[in-house]
Length: 254
Ligand code: FPP
Image (cartoon, rainbow, N blue to C red):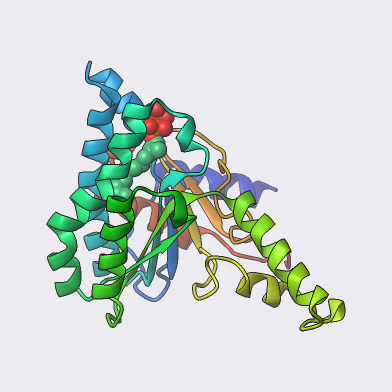
């Protein structure tokens, strides 16, 4: 118990004095980019200004993740629940992928980044879908960091789809109930070609999952920070990775 207490006390220092162990880099980092609205409010700006600033941070974090040799970076850009926001804000958010990619796609390609998307694309505006599809297509041969945008993503929606998919296979006698296992379920999710995240980061002090990767985060390490997403820097990413490296992952063992 004392060991656990001190382990957490150490985390409060966030290990800024130690350096990153290049042999223990989380392969997959997932980020809930939260706090854009509050960032803007604190500055007396409209909420969308926070989203614009938040978009600029993505570029820096992708670069840093690449330098650290992270292999997969998943960013929660728009949830299935975000449609409840005012139309002007939703419209603004839907324009961001296009804005981001028209500016950053050449650099992403140069840095061997592969863009990937997960979520229900069918209801996205044409210009949003076209922008991401073009980025996916133009980077599909790249072998470096996989940049996975969760766009109109909701974990429960993903799970419902998976259950329906498996049920169909059973109904059509393509699958026996006895063969349903964890691996099969993982392979039926939108992350079928990605490993589960090793590290989940959420900014802005909120400590909840908000319908994000509920199955995939079963054994991930969580790191929360009060920093609002538009203020998040590569130093913060380093802190998260250093803290991750101090954790002992036991996967239910001892
Ligand atoms: C949550 O903050 C943030 C979002 C719902 C949107 C996140 C999107 C970006 C950072 C840019 C996406 C860019 C691309 C290229 C896809 P919030 O608005 O809920 O903040 P609040 O809790 O302070 O109100």
